[in-house]
Length: 343
Ligand code: EPU
Image 1: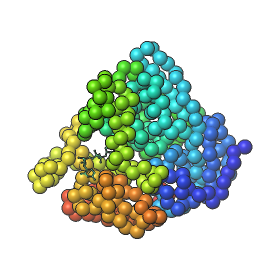
Image 2: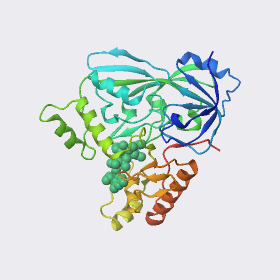
Image 3: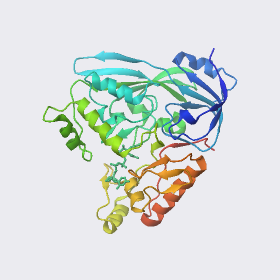
Image 4: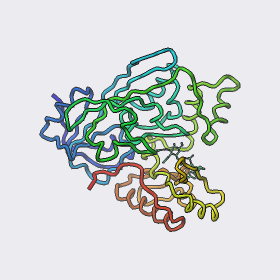
């Protein structure tokens, strides 16, 4: 039987570390426990929260329902043709540990996504991305339990509707699926993707004239991230707090005329992605603190739990930042983490 805890403390179960509680909490360690969970009197399809590492969540209040912590483990090599491998990892595997494992096997594809907090099962939800790579480029299929039909299904990458920090799983159409494992298609041949910022330079420094490989790139990414981004175990945060806004070419041209050094990234559809961190930084907000919540002092896109922040502190700080950026640049920022409970 699965053990239910009531009035459970969620502070250690999400990386922002806010003092919030769940009405009920269970931990899933085997996907076959799903049917037991659905039969619990505490289970309500409208209110249940399937929780991974809690690294992309902002709890604005106590959670008024059942929280299911996805903690099933297991990594399996499914196919290997000598060039490409297909590897399946359970949803509850730690993302970074899984990436390190793939790199140690000599498999390439995920190395640029090293050190992203969270679990394997959460990676497809927001299509995690960093240093020029999005996880969609390596996902072959996502194994899910369909709550509507109570059947197991495989969603192919195309069925997942991946986009920048987005997928079907973030929308109403995808709420029926509980992700239990993910299959990744990786390569035995290292394909460097080094075009982002100073990654190539850092990786070459580490390689010291040896040929580059995925493990060296992973190490370079870890070094860069450790320098810029706060470690959630030491300083609560949810990674990028805002998405990088995408504006039309005309709006970008106006902004570039006024701010010639503004970072901007043309997209394939003609629109331009801006760097939210730069916009916030230009408003002089790096380090800005409101109650216990603050803008990180090395990367303005990240909000941190500086001193026993409450959810209200974080909400007020986020609103203040949005207002400053809108006033100065006429750009509306959108938050990246999921705010819960949803009204
Ligand atoms: N910038 C500033 N000041 C800042 C922050 C950034 O001037 O305080 C400038 C940088 O100098 C650079 C540009 O803005 O010119 C972009 O900054 P950076 O390379 O640090 O990346 P980002 O756009 O701020 C995105 C992702 C990160 C990911 C990095 C690296 C989003 C929302 N964020 O950040 O993802 O690690 O690129 O690829 O797309 C996350 O999602 O949690 C996350 C950390």
